[in-house]
Image 1: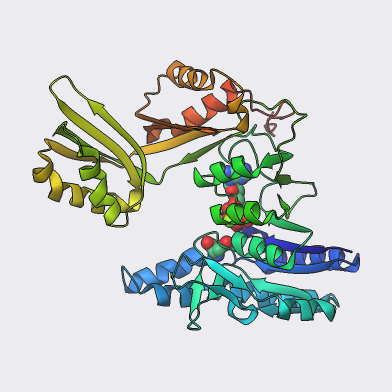
Image 2 (image 1 turned 180 degrees about the horizontal axis):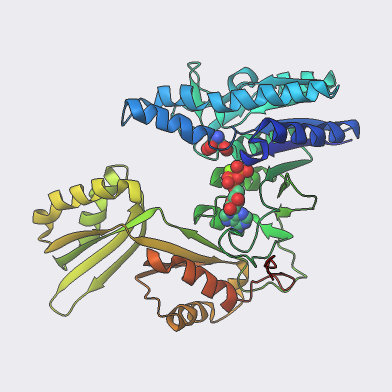
Amino acid sequence: MSLIVQKYGGTSIGSTDRIEAVADKIAKFRKQGNDVVVVVSAMSGETNRLVSLAQAIQEHPAPREMDVLLSTGEQVTMALLCMALQKRDCGARSFTGGQVRILTDEDHTRARIREIDDSRIHAELDSGNVVVVAGFQGVDDGGNITTLGRGGSDTTAVALAAALKADECQIYTDVKGVYTVDPRMVEDASLLDTITFEEMLELASLGAKVLQIRSVEFAGKYKVPLRVLSSFEEGEGTLISVEEDSNMEKPAISGIAFARDEAKLTVSGVPDVPGVAYKVIGPVSDAGIEVDVIVQNVSADGTTDITFTVKRSDSERARDILNAQATVLGAADVSVDARIAKVSIVGVGMRSHAGVASKMFKALADEGINIQVITTSEIKISVVVDEKYLELAVRALHSAFDLGDPNYQPKQDKQT
Ligand code: ADP
Ligand code: ASP
Ligand code: MG
């Protein structure tokens, strides 16, 4: 008998029919003798709907009230799922984050979990019930409802699995597991049997939204066996593994991620003296804006250009800060380009394969795609390109690194 934490995402429980189908799955699992803790998201689209309701009233609502509002979506699904389980004679009880006592800091809309009280869950499991917990929410020291950032139910599930020392944390979603690239963009993306935490962390932070970044951090830190799998189809899904399989010849690249949510700022014609980078980036960071990729170029006339990227939603604020700094800096111009995208290749195999970067640049050059900025780390290379080339770039790289599924069958056209 094992203790399993299962998380069901928005599409997996997007209608009462889907909730009934998930209840069948859970009840079967329970009948096999397993202890089951289930974490639910809100129905698909519900959290976005709540955000737009808030925005119809106020452009920047108080984060505390946003959390009160956004946490309601998960409260609906946890109750409906319990009803569906009880209808199947499977004992089940639902709990909000606050009822469990998932204790977080006070950072509303992006709170971090500090501590989980597992006593109530254990008591329910001991009396034979399936425990259903609302994902994405917790409570701070003052008893205020907090939420964990978009996609945060993944983190609730992993954190519960860590606290309960579960045998496995299973993230059920609308695709069969983790693929070499988002299968919604590239049809012949390959399903990965395993991927290392390190790689998954990079993919998640570089835009692959299949798992929330914090959930992967948590799983790595507490060594939680984590699996991503489909709630619609049978299959083993993808295991996020702690260990690299040293017997296996690693491909250079395991996956590709992309992000459209950044903007590029360039400060040009700044006299090139010590402290320039600090004077440009310093005030932007001081304003709490996260700076991602940075490049600095010096031209023959002794001036320098500094280009960096920030979240698209922060770009206007960053531009205003730089415009205010322009005279101090002696800058000729400050410009913003929001029509950019970042494409990244990720793989622990990069450590032992030479020529990965040049292969990437050649694949992009062959498609006539101009690279605007490049940044690398030990296991990833990211490039910034014009947004209109995003899909072309991703497809070109997927095929250049032979990531396509050899068994992929294009869908037949029914007309012929
Ligand atoms: P859920 O509602 O179940 O949490 P999400 O929409 O958050 O689901 O995450 C699943 C989605 O992640 C998939 O539908 C897929 O489009 C996207 N995705 C992005 N990159 C990948 C990848 N490398 N592998 C699998 N899915 C990916
Ligand atoms: N419902 C929340 C969201 O849409 C949390 C989640 O689904 O994980 O972001
Ligand atoms: Mg998600």
